[in-house]
Image (cartoon, rainbow over all chains, first blue to last red):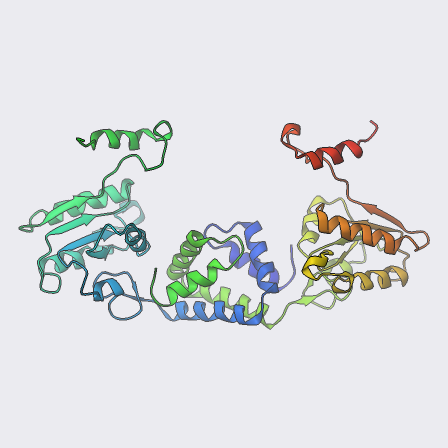
Length: 202
Length: 202
């Protein structure tokens, strides 16, 4: 619809997730109007991403140095490892302030149809980490926090099998049930079923 | 929440219109995972935008050369000019296939509180264009297609005043009324009022 670089920009923006044609156009015209320093900053961060992002050598999340801030923090509990699928799951759990241990990012979930098997995930690294102690402290609990969907559940099942032979290790899974603030009548039957089977004594 | 360039990227993306913190994170992790050529393309179009976008010397919309495709097209009716606020209004009207004349982009609407007066808009260029004929053809109709909001209506009123002394020139305004496919009961009272005052004999 537009001529020259404006349409090219709209086309490129439209390839981003969650950006439809209307949003792409809106963002493009916004960028046409911004001051050069703002465009420079956007270009500079893209260049840094282009040059490569570092990942924590221990847990596999996004890091600025060799280790991420959480793995480098001596105050974090070394005896607990929370296993997540993606780096973006880490800040989600951090925001709850419920967990003071460390993380392990798998880099996805088992999905054989898409060619993701155990070898494509950082499972070997997890086993090595548990087997060789975490900074000299025995790991006593692994919390499996993969997504509550088919792939995440399959990954959790696989991990439980791999981890059950470690002596003194408890393997737990995040609870499934009704989301807080939600309405029981709007819950899907799978969630409601999980809420029933996981009911607690008060 | 994240370390290094990833957080910088999320911050920059979050400044774009319509991109909230969650979308910014989603786009950032998408960009982390794309192939280098895709990032290169995004960087290249941003660089082109950074170097400056050209605008049509006649109508003021985004152009690849001196004139935009519409102004350069000899088949377009030179006797009609449709006045719009922004370049993005042009493809919106083009999609209707109702208009075969040319456009004039004002570059905004009158908004004295934000410091936008007639001098900040391309009104002088419009008057020159009408006064000196459009490529040797007299302009006989100016369709004012500014937005149907306070600023757009004020701009339309101002333009009508400026244009009424041109001999043989008809000045029209896009109709306001109920949007097609809408539901009468959900229309706001201003729109419904306009639909009443603009009712037509069948």
